[in-house]
Image 1 (spheres, rainbow, N blue to C red):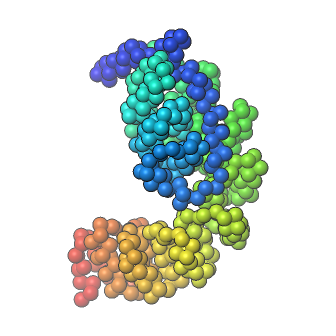
Image 2: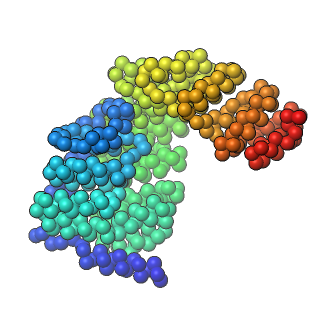
Image 3: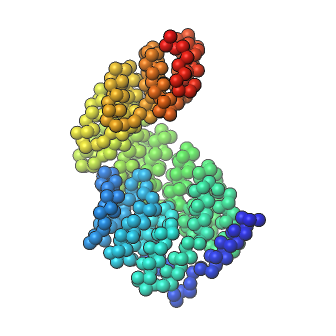
Length: 466
């Protein structure tokens, strides 16, 4: 009853601030909101193959201010933020919009705000205040009033509920919107489809898209990407491919996310030939593969035993002057280690600093695993010490990799020391470490007290070293 009262209050508030008449204008009929994708495809030309290192500098650019910045540079900066991983928060985008508003480029601020929403990044109160200010500066008071209504719209509530994992409540609000005669927009439907996909309710998600079409609400690229991703994650990549073809027939143009999702799906299904065909189609359609797409393809090639082809693509990326990040090199190092080319992996790992690429904990773990696989324990221990000297804190993966390697080498003393250090740092043994301990207990290679020490509190060494 309380929830229903809250919903009624929200709906009543929404009605009070709902869209004004066409004479005063609304957010829905604002000129630059009529064709948001026209703007999107214009700015896509700035994406190219910009390096991730340049993308990561957007925070420095925002801190330095945007005085006298040109429109093209603003668009390029905005696009680099959208391509950054992890994706910037709405706070970062608000900082961009706020600085840009000070340069009096109000129409551009409003267009970028809409693009942010279309990319699935929800407005917050500060964003809407910026929009209201821009509308007022452009003397579009009707639009400003409608922007105020955005604060209370049910679509935002549905989005919040889905993100909190409360899909049932979100669907209840959707049904209430329909009951009250409020038409959900594409973003609301896409949000619900996303929630259904997250719960692996793919048939319902597909039905939801059919429902939105039947109600005259056209699915956009985000809707299709969400649904395609859901089917690919469920290892139904063929269904995802049919959705991709259906999308094209509806005139929705695939983007980098669409192609990357399909490529990853086919790689994980070990359909490498199809994955490469999708990649070639992507290039032929003029959709530039970025670092993320190349990383997915390289990872798929390495995992499916096509290391030489992966190395060939890496060489082409170098020739194209692409500035590669540690993620790309980690994939190749991992592929080399899996192919037992540990020396080649080590050479590439050691050359990273010369390439201006900073190592991370994952790259250290991959290299440590490769050395341990070859039973080069002295080299692995030296690298372990080196990473700590360089300021990289080992994680649970680091410790478990070394513990297993020393157990296999019958170096119980070092294993115990590593276990104690691991527990002192707040990490615990993983399933693989427990399995090797159980196997060695069964074969009599370890004392039974070892298992108690492994799972017990820090400092409990029992009589292992007596």
